[in-house]
Length: 192
Image 1 (cartoon, rainbow, N blue to C red):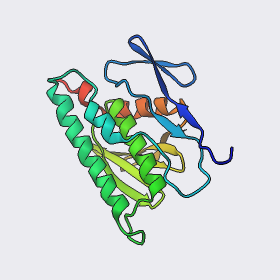
Image 2 (spheres, rainbow, N blue to C red; image 1 turned 60 degrees about the horizontal axis):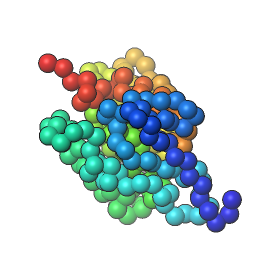
Image 3 (cartoon, rainbow, N blue to C red; image 1 turned 180 degrees about the horizontal axis):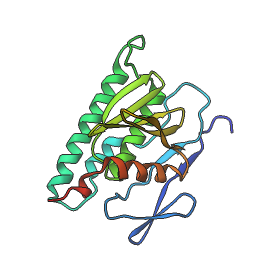
Image 4 (tube, helix red, strand yellow; image 1 turned 90 degrees about the horizontal axis):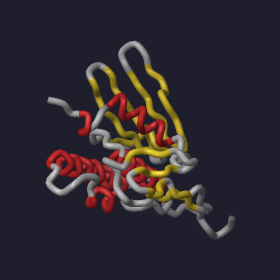
């Protein structure tokens, strides 16, 4: 395909369930009615066009008056701001994030928000990848996003390894995000 960038829609709405690419479904109680699209490829160095995470965060995922969601949105907006700062650094800086990595990072950030994970910290591994991280006790968890994919990594004092991996444009990303949610939790899982 020359001159055009193909897109894959991840979500379509049917009643109270989301139909994911590949036919899998998920409950929509904490998701928003916004379709996301990720380009499968690009032939030049322009950023991959993705829906702006700011629009998703401004819409929220729950009913008006949900204090936890307001706080979580503010935390995610701070992460988005940090990602934008990394992308605005001179390209010879250590923490610089290139335009493609920024777009993929924004897309992954919107998915993390939609799947109700606690807001992560953000950094760069190199100019071509964005790393989201969480600490839980002695364990550290990372979602490394780059080259169109995402790897969820768990690191403890005794072991380190990839727990799950998927391309951002495949339905399998849902499984990786659910796995991340099981490990790092989110506002829906707050008790007491």
